[in-house]
Image (cartoon, rainbow, N blue to C red; front, side, top):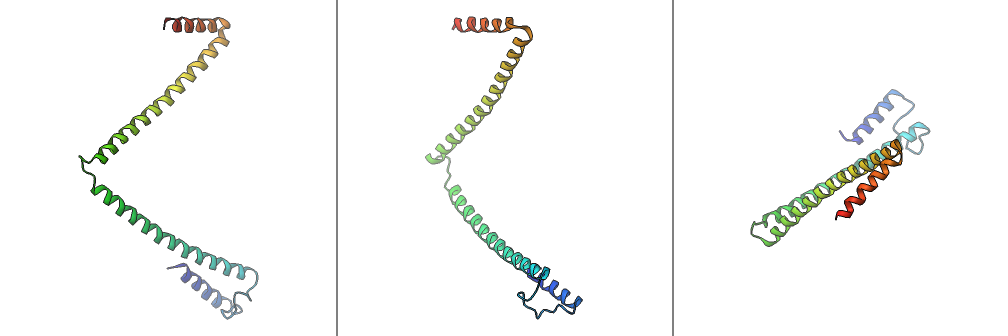
Length: 143
C-alpha cells in the first residue's frame, strides 16, 4: 500500500473517531498539529514520488551500463591487440598495487626500527647512538 493510501486511511480514522474533525475542512483551515500533520503527509508523498522516479532512472542507467559492457565484452578476442594491451595494463596495475602495499609495510617496519633505535639511545646513553652511527658509517663506507 502506498503512502497515499495510508494518509487516506488515517484521515478516515481521524474523521470517524472525532466527529468535530471532518474531512470537509481544507488544510488551510486546520490548526496546530493537524496542519503540521497534513504538511508532513504531503512532504512524504512528494519524497515517495521522487524516490520512485530515482529508482526508475537508476534502473535505466544500470540496464544501459549492462548493455554497453555486454557489447564491449563480445569484442574481446584473445588475439585482439586492444585486449592484449588491457591485459598487460591490468597486470601492471596489480604489480603496482602489490609494490604499494609492501612499500607501506616496509615503511612501517623502518619507522618502528628507528623508534626502537632512538629508545635504545635514551636507555643506554649516547653509546648506543654512537654505535649505530658508527655502524652506519662503516656500512655506507663499504659501498
